[in-house]
Image (cartoon, rainbow, N blue to C red; front, side, top):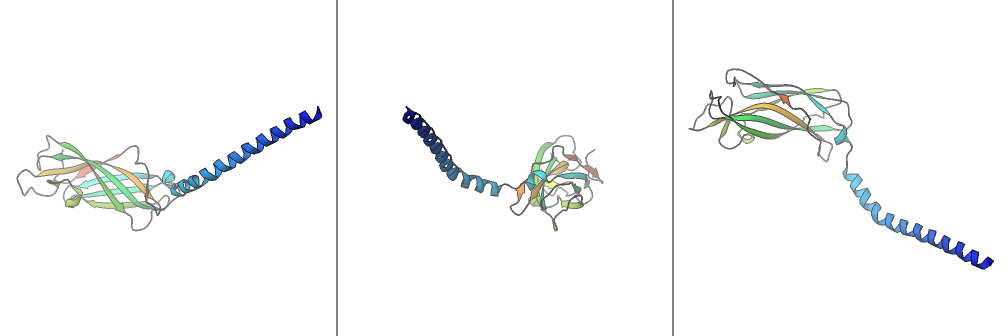
Length: 186
């Protein structure tokens, strides 16, 4: 009878050993995948936050003046993606009807923006590469018949973090732009 009890114990020990070996084999297969994935994830892109301070459109020269402040959070902030929403009007001074249009601009920073630091950016919307085909900025005069005018109304920001240029989520609330000058819609 004592031999029968020993065989049950041996069988249980063998089962536990087989389970442990099975777990080790599965872990050996999964671990490299987890290691590769964790190398690609930069936690900094989740912690960097920027705050818009000011957005003004100079209706006289077409520049968009933007001020942003970086809040607390680790990581190197080397670039900001600006999501510009605005309206396309039929012609300068014709502010009655418009079509909504979004433009994305990447703005590399000369030096990384440190925690709690602020910076001012000047975007020239006279640059034709920023505008859709057939659309001119608020300060350009319509040279050709049917030229349309683009006027930004609000901006949103998405920080680009680290050497791998990981894009963070845009801010939840965009900032409205004030237009100052002669060529501004009412």
